Picture (cartoon, rainbow, N blue to C red):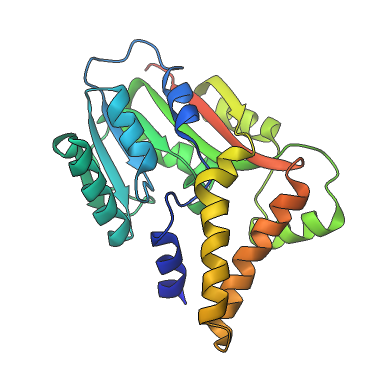
Length: 248
């Protein structure tokens, strides 16, 4: 079913919540960058945020993902936008991407850090940042205390590691970063380029795979995620964190 799952996400504009406006806002939080910063985009997917970064800087971007079709889409988009010479696409594992220490001025990870875990990622990726380098990441957090039973049960199954914003701020400080800014992505950042096109696609797939139980299980699971957000969006959301590695 991994192939079917990936095939669904290959057809979407982006593979998780996000919005170009907030990619720009996060980038603008970073001061004293070199004229041509080196950027590592981890879990880039098909690269909507990668292309925004290429508009904001003349630097070189290394975009990594472990799913080759996403990288192929990004290559096509980058070439079409005339920035293919500044975006290097690599099939690599975010747990151990294999770069030399102190290589990058910025590490970017929109919607992908959950794969490795927030605290582990901050510790693992730190060595790839130059002293004073920045990291910009998004992850899902509880926004209100005491979520309804249905919601709590759902996320306990899907992402039991989910905690509050305050917990993440404590992790940032305890891993020797400086918190520069953080902000919650609005609901439209979930819907416009992610849930709305996903829901349209799921409706089509239901008709195509109605007699195939395994595919229908995937479809129902993704629809459940959308329905949960539609009902309980006030209780959780994606948060952008912009942090800086302490000078050593």
